[in-house]
Image (cartoon, rainbow, N blue to C red; front, side, top):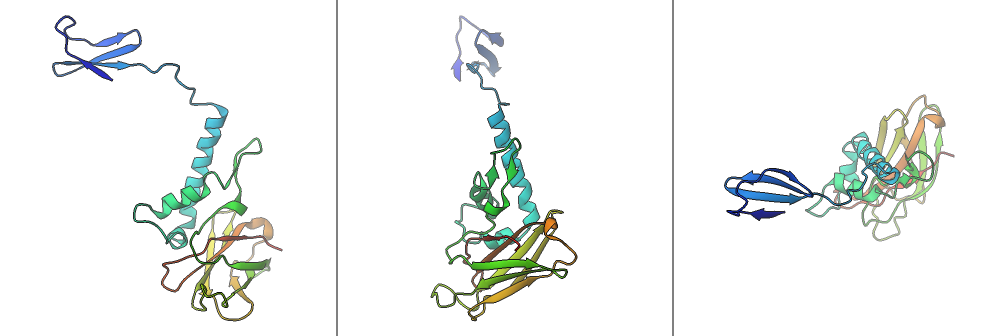
Length: 209
């Protein structure tokens, strides 16, 4: 943008060629029009917009759980921004005709604690049972750490269960989700956080056996 106050031109308003002129007080203001404006509706741009909207819409589904999962933040960011950064574009699948969320790559926690080692998840009429290895021999882990397990249904319901990591060789966490089938389940995730919640692990996606 350039400004002009020229006694030869006097007051200037309107459009001239590639310029738009306006007045600000006694000053003429001249703005250049964009040359070769880009089409904002290309297929690539539309897919990018769809991707962004889909990840944005996922954020409220997890509620406050994302503040727990992304607790290791700098003072200049938020759980929302950390969630968006972790999943754009990593959790987006654009390989087909329609852009979709790849829930197996969706991150709902990120931190420096060792990632939980998960064996399997099984489903019955009462809920989901996830088997995992506490791995308390790792000095970064503690039996007082909290395992956070959740089941996201295709109805957007989120079922959450928390329990201490424990000190056994292997353990299970049960998420009571009554009267659902494997077809009703969108995704299952686990992560671990220390007792005061200041550190977390990355999340683990678990498929139903």
